[in-house]
Amino acid sequence: MRALTLRAAVSLAALVPAVAAAQQDTRAQVRSLQYPPLRFQPPSPKRLALSNGVALYLLADKSLPTLSVQVRSKRGTAHLPDSLWGVGWQADNLMRTGGTTGLAPDSVDRLIEFYALQVNIFTDNEQSGASVAGLARYRDQMLDLLFDMLRNPRNDSSRVRITSAQQQESWRRRNDQPGSILGRAWAQVIEGDHPLGRSLVTPDEIAGFTPARFRWVQERLFCPQNLVIGISGDFEERSLVTKLEGLFRGWPACPAGLRQLPPLTYAQGPKVVYVEKDVNQTNIRMGHAGGIRVANNPEYFAAQVADFIMGGSGFTSRMLQRVRSDSGFAYSAFTQWGSDTQREDQFFAQAQIRAEKTVAGLKLMKDVIASMAAQPPTATDVKLAQDNEVNSFVFQFENSAQIVGQQLGYALNGLPPNWFDLYLRGIQGVTADQVKAVTAKYLHPDRLVVLVVGKSSAFDRPLSELGEVTVLPVDAIKR
Image (cartoon, rainbow, N blue to C red; front, side):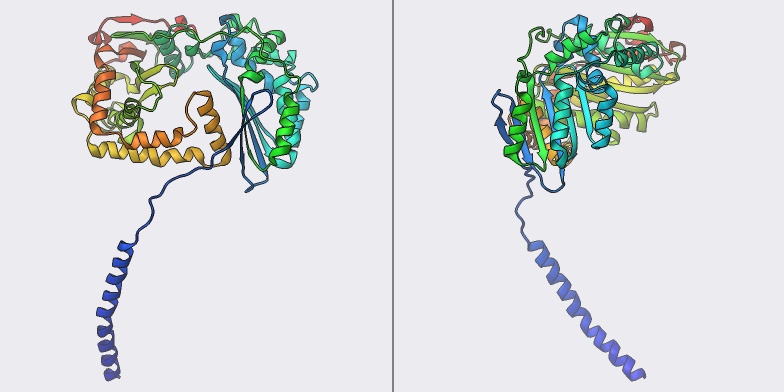
């Protein structure tokens, strides 16, 4: 028995070098493997034009027996006369809930439920839109219903009254939450009464809610010359196009009455504005005009990377690390460096600071903004931001409806169809020196507009240490 065990041990010992050699050889083979570089290539929708000129984006996807229809308008509430802004802000709600000229509101609801449709209609500042999704075999029913809601809204008077009551309650409770106060006060301070800064319907506007006024707005936001359409899913192209041609037949051209967007000028700092609110966490926002437009140029891409490093990446960002993790002043702190294709947007930093650390936290936030130029990010910081943006960007293309939606957005915003590729290449080309240069050029810690919502008697230091303070009474916030 001992002899057998000894022979087995000797045999096993002899195998060990052979196994080790095989493992090393396998590792070498694996390391020598070469793969073509991975490249994300989402399918491209087919672009057509209906006989009335409406652009149509089609992306067939037979993986599921479903259909998604997206209708987007290049006009929004900011294009309405000021007297109708509030009507426009709720016009989407009435189109969805107010029925059509041929269907009572309850009938619309029953059809949506019976066919298991997902219906959405929205009006926003500069664009509006509608969508419907459901089983592909109900294509005609979903298209008929969606276009009936867009072309022939009833704006049932009972639903108008419900909408009015809801908006009255929203107005009554507008100052309940400090976050709401902060957002509305910031828009008023930085943008004045520009339509892009409005977010709440006033009692005077609510008093003007009538079916006729809603219809006036709806027929100007949703009309053929303003629309682009995207359809994805299980469909047959020829019959679908024929169906759409029939739905548009007889739809009048867009009536006059809308306007070009008024010029927008942001307030300039330094300025400190204080709103009194009895809360144990001070709500703070500080910022100024952002200076950046969405475009295929190095400054735009560098600003995107800079924002990620400074305050857009959560726990890895400078703002959250220094204001929360290192100092314990706040639970949340972030930055947002906005941009638009038509104009510059805003840059701002925001935080909820412990009341007894308010002024110290304010000063630290300003220091973090200044550090982007004084202590520029390293190449490693930039690489982390690039990898995060590139790896997360593809999740905007998870299904065919998202892909079509991206193309609709590019078309309405004046971006090229291949913006996806241009954006990724631009982000990947950013250098640490470009990040330093763009922050030094466009971020000005000494010119910030600072808005503080909180209880001054609980502050660690007087706000006047930051400069002259303007008090904005909470009831003076218009929207």
